[in-house]
Amino acid sequence: MSNNNHAQATLAGGCFWCTEAVFQDLKGVTHVESGYSGGHVVNPSYEQICQKTTGHAEVIRISYDPAIISFEDLLDVFWATHNPTTPNQQGNDKGPQYRSAIFYASESEKEIAEKSMQAADASDLWPNAIVTEISPLINYYPAEPGHQNYFKRIGNQNPYCTYVINPKVEKLKAKFGEKLKD
Image 1: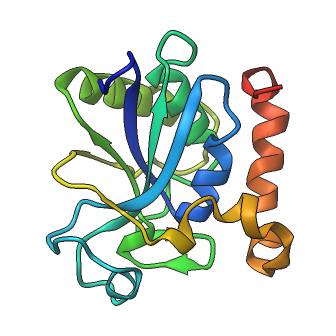
Image 2 (image 1 turned 90 degrees about the vertical axis):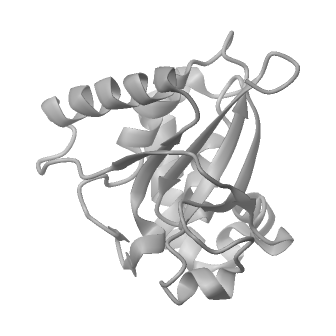
């Protein structure tokens, strides 16, 4: 938990521009920050991450009010809005920095993540087995300012957003419309 009775979740679901855009508009989410986690390099840069040698994944750190949205709810959105069955890949984005991962901050989060993954894997959500990494949160580094709030700032000016992020946001709206901010 962080101050003001808010909690944080650190998730990796491919490109952080995509995952950031998906989680920003959920009720109870107060802030989403793009960053790096899970590797061995201290305070890595985007350029270092792209070399695929740091061990870090592109992640988002979600600050949320658990009285409004639960960790379980965040994970439901996580499973449905990226492909957790492809190791080190989301669509055309390939490399360990694009892996699917949940970085837990407590044993409780670990248990919730494991149960949630088992339920998602047993559902008909994905035809292949889920390969999401569930690991302890050992480090987190914010990404550079140019990566923050990317979709809201750049949107469809970047073709990547049009072809990759828009479909994820539309899937969110269709499947989780009741969880979106007004």
